[in-house]
Amino acid sequence: MKNLPAKDADKGTNFTVADFLEAGRDRLKIKLVAGAENVSKVMAEPIVNRLGLALTGFFGCFAWKRLQLIGNAEWAYLTSLSGKERTARFKELVSHKAWLFVFTADRHASAEEIKIAEECGAVIMESPLKTRIFSRHATFIMEQLGAPKTSLYGTMIEVSGLGVLIEGDPGLGKSETALGLIKRGNALIADDLTCIRKDVATNFLFASASDSTAGFMEIRGIGIMNVSRVFGVNAVRGEKRLQLVLTLKRLDDIKGEVDRIGQTRRARTILGVDVPNIIIPVSEGRDLVNLVETAAQQQKLILAGYDPVADLSDHLHRRAQDFKVKKGKGKTNGR
Image (tube, rainbow, N blue to C red):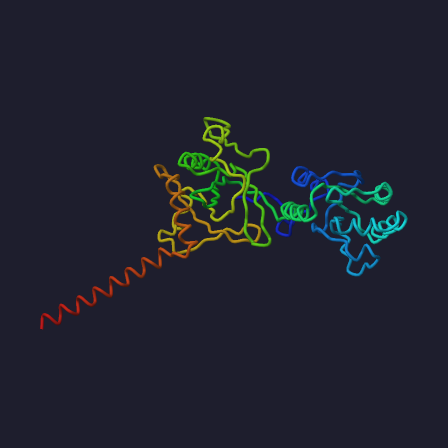
């Protein structure tokens, strides 16, 4: 499977104020009130910062690159000042490089603050959400926007609750296999092109479709299919953790490479995370739908701590021990 180019993907993805505004338009109910010409600036530190002591004039360890949040506490302090003092404090913030502000809890920037922002290249946004609610949702949105990302050629399916990516050369039947799995009650995540993001906190990978192709499949001979319209809304998922990669290969291409026992544990490294990888030989007459479903169910047992190879080894060892005991008893009886 081929990874599409992604500059510094494992280090995180840069995003702009415009990206944040678009992503938070509905969830954050956010709107731009100043600095429209500066929304192309990159949010270098995608974290919310409470201004605190900076409002009083203390700028030691001031995190100026972050999103400066002005909620009820900050608003109460600012409104306790005279109009002239409040304007002076805002000017000080901007003079110490702060450039991105958001007023929450239905608080609004003053005309003077908007004017200063426009003159100095700063951006001011407003949201009616309570400060704690805005902070939580904004943090989640920024983490998603800034997460390490890449795109892979492959079809992502939820199989028996497990996130499975099916990869392989064109013409090997990835989409047809996925279609068979969907008809058995499994769900489509993405067809052909799968978007991967890394959750840095957990080191988990999550897969989804691109916005333009979500919920659609291409089946040779049938064409484009809207999966939820054909099979129902439960046949599609928005995002799923990636826990297994299945690589389809022609049998002639991997002679001598197939691990018949399954003792060798392969891994596919994506964005620095190792994902279990199984190679499935493709040949005429093989039931790929059944094989993929079985591989997923087997992987669930392995993730739960069960090792079938070790279990078989123990079973054979016990049989050998029983045979030795029986053989020993037979010699004793013969005497």
